[in-house]
Image (cartoon, rainbow, N blue to C red; front, side):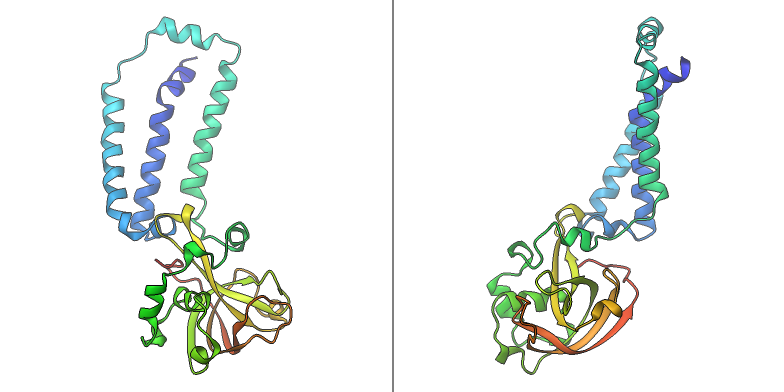
Amino acid sequence: MRFRRLLRRWQGAVLSVVGIVATVWLGFSGQLGLYIHPRYFVFTWVMAGIAGVLVVAAFALVPAAEHEHEARDDEGRWAWLWSAGSILIIASAVVGLLVLPPATLTTATVAKRDLNGSTSSITQSEANDLVGGDYSTFTVRDWSSLLRQGAGEDFFADKTATVTGFVTPDPSDPENVFFVARFIVACCAVDAQPVGVPVYHPGWQDEFPVDSWVSIVSGFGTNPSISSEEAIVLVGSEITPTDQPAQPYVY
């Protein structure tokens, strides 16, 4: 009964401690960027510090509850069920935040969001600024935005893209075309939007598993596929398997 009373009183504080420890660990291990935009790192650390102070204050200052009131609560028929639920919530938080390694977003998320949608594209003004820039430094987002803005074949004819991303199939022709993709994070992983550059490479599944990371050096050309909805693709590609970068998202 005493354990149940303590659990009820300190469940919120324990969950807060788990969240604080997870935040600090992600920050020191360099993995906080898997969840939020770097511009929010300092804010997150400050809030974690404030939360830590409040948790300490809670343990030190919150008075003990009246024993009679707690006893009546614990005598309810659902007391043990409530305790089991609390333990399950705390255990799930520990496993999810501290035990399981952080994971990046994958094709499963791409399927639920609009690849190269309007919210992931740069503006027309930004696209105009890219024209004439250093194409060797262009990211997946830059090239995908230029494609979406309608730059024609003449523009891409003499351009070579050097990009890195994960492999995700083209829904309109998954046998012959895949996208080399990344996620754009504006605030946090919850709002991440996928962008990608189409690659024509028949039988790609035999060489590059979905969600594996590749580096590509390739020129652009008309898409040979009669099924794909992508007009311009990377063709004649030099595709090299690679490890996921330390920072898999673009900002």
